Length: 460
Image (cartoon, rainbow, N blue to C red; front, side, top):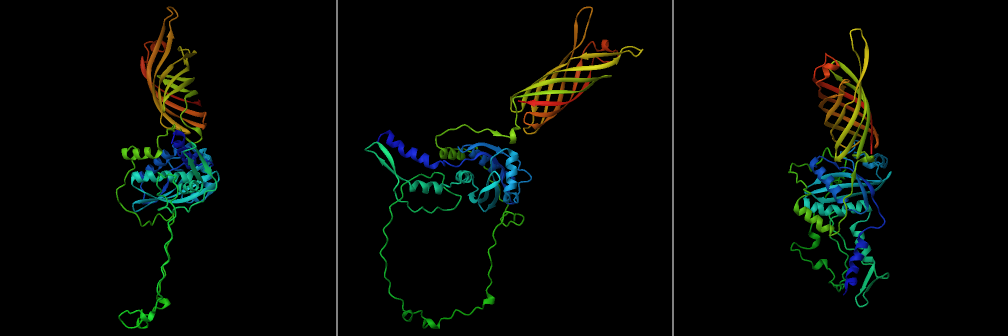
């Protein structure tokens, strides 16, 4: 067999295993709704596992994580396509995967819901083990079926219904449309499917056994050792003595009276565990693909450049300055930015005892670091910077005198849309200059100065 004939089965298997008609596109993913048997750490582990597995699925273009879970997403919302559609629209997605989780002994019972737009496409219940490695192995086929609507059993049945013949002598392979469809092999527990299913030819049917001819039963010849069969009495029971107990179906809403609550230690799912990682790597094979970007809903994530136009007030000694200016911040990594700004400070003051009013300007420049604490519409930040300003110019000598200092600051941007928001900034600094007393004899050479500004931020 040459290379072409050897690659034939591999190419065919790849074509049959990957669904061709179902796409998940931009999927909104939220933490599952737990009952009282499942602890918060376990919910977080399942959420991380779902997100990690979905990154490797070719039908998922982007994962929109909604964490923490929206207040409107409860068990009642899972029954409402309108409620799920509203969450999808607010997150900027096209589909959504969510559901509930409860613990039953050593297994999780997952009731998963997959919504497309304003309709519920699938609602399926799975039972998967709680042990880390078996859980990782069981989750992949679960997610494939929820996102594509095709289960591994269906993929296997479709592969078996397509006759495949490989001709080694002709160095080619061909599909036969007239191959008989074998009966599908029954699977064990639903939701605990093997990850490493392969397309194999069905085994030949076993020959039917010859029928066994039994002698006709004669009650008179049957000896029980207590006489004839008519002498045996089982007693009598009236219909009133029979109590019929109907099995009560388990509801996802009946969490307050759960009988499976126990205090056994939580077995955390460690995604960095070597055994878990090797199992995940073996299942995915040798193929590689880039990790998808996880965006915040509607694009309110960190931007590369922030430009803020602002105005406000600042105090130094007896002076109350009005201020106006701008600042540009360039993101270095995550939420850390380098900020450079310039402002014009203006003050009107009395210059003599006769009440003569003069207007003076200074133009401080600041440079420093700002750290944005989180992404989203509301982005708070903290930071510090150095401040420099020309204080005055000696007209006789032409020499310039400066004031310098430092400042700590904090504030926030609230974005109406991903590119435009309002800004509030407050700070407290120290400014020193040897010529302050020449500006006004009541000023000290060094002192504190608080600042406060409001404005608009434009993000790109």
